[in-house]
Structures are given as structure tokens and as C-alpha cells.
Image (cartoon, rainbow, N blue to C red; front, side):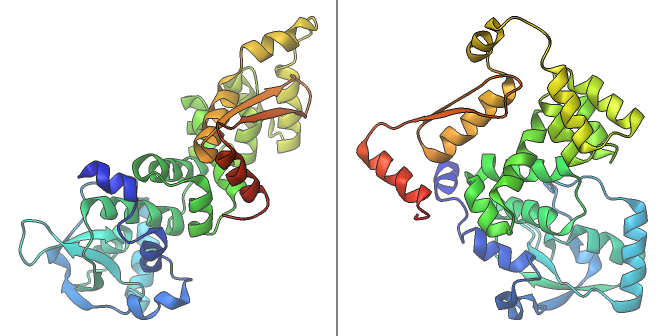
Length: 297
């Protein structure tokens, strides 16, 4: 059963679920009209909610807004499995928590018949679309959608209204050392700084220097190139081709998965250019690739 769900992706399709959690989608306006109001004590959070951190300051600000204007955007809930008369939050836990702080007794809700897989997917989408996520959290959300549900970067870009390069660049941040990722999560490093750090020989040392000296992204990029280009004989070129760095291997894997054919990337340290080789197994694969490059599907 699980394999079947994974193979078909979302039961309703990514765009259909996005309609419930994306306020900008005009066609979903009628669907966001509350189905009903439910006593707040009959609503419980999703135990598998992917977001675990809720900033008290932000919750207090939201609670103040709710006191003044009420809950404008309904929560999305489903009937709580095994508990008659109770509902489980699919999207909107921050509003539920803030409403309790504001001492509301009832909340407007949209009741949806989601299965466990769809509940998790909507929760991830809502976090990406609504919450003030740092780049690492956003990247982790993209990775969850890809790993758990088989979505490609292209499909995510289309459904979430983000560029393919934005998603690809953020996913690369997940390859950073834990210490550097923590700096990004804390706001000490921007996503641009972090992307520069990825290519450095010692990402942690360079990240600490960026923070200590307040370096710009361009300065960080120049330092990263200098760090990874020690003065060595020309044989370094051939050696680098035989021993690819982890980022290059990861990018090859992502491209191979997205295109369905083997991808090989070769570049010389210090050179902005390089070579990417695609290997197709049949003329059908070649035709498919040509159609993609020409803008077809």
C-alpha cells in the first residue's frame, strides 16, 4: 500500500493540495471559507508535524493580531482517527497555539479527508509557503517532499512558484557541515554566504572568518576559490577528475535522477567552466531530452 502511494505521489496531486494552503491562489477562495467552527479543546496538533520550533515572540505577536482581528485564515483539519468528535490539525498549528494565548474558545476550520501521507505533505508545504523559515529549514522541506513523495525539482518549482535554481541552490546547503548549517539557521550566515562556503576546502574555517570579519558574499566567493586552489603542480587537474568532491557527486546524482540518464560533470579547480556529459541508453531517451531542452514536456 505504501509503495502504491509513493508511486502515484499525492492522491489529489500537488497543485490540488496547494489550493488549501496558498492564500494567493484565487481559485481556492471559496474553499477557504470555513466549513464550520470547532471548540478549541476538540482540536489537537498533528503528532508528526515536521516543524518543532515555535518562537514565543512570534506567537505572542500573532496572538495580539488574533485578539484584534480574529483568525482570518481557517485551520485545515481532519477527523482525528479513533477519537469521535475530535479533529487533528493538518495545517495551522501556529494559529492554534496563538489562539489559545488569545483565549479564543472556537476556531474556524476547513475539514478535509486526508490520509496520513497527505497530512504530512500538506504540513511540509504549509511550512515552506507560510512560515518564516531559514534557508536550511526550507531546504529540508524541499528534501522531504522529494524523498518521501518522489517529487522532482521541476515539479516543486512549478507548484510552489519558485525557480528551479532556487530549489537546487538551497538543496546544496544540506551538504554543509553541521556547524556551518547551525550558523545559517541562527542567521549568522546568509544563503549566499553558505553557497560560497560549500566550495571551500575548509567550510567551517571560512564560515567563521565570514562571521568574524563581516565579509560580503563576493569576498567570501573569492576566498573560497583561493582556499581550494593551493599552489600545486598541474597534475592536480587530472587528480581532481579522478577524485570528485562531494558536491559534484551530489549534483551528478540529482541531475541523473531528474533526467533519467547518467550525468558526469568535470571541471578544473579555479576555472568557472567545465564539461557535463549526458549518456542516453536509447533514441527515446535522446528524443525526450531534446524535447525538454526545446521547452516541451
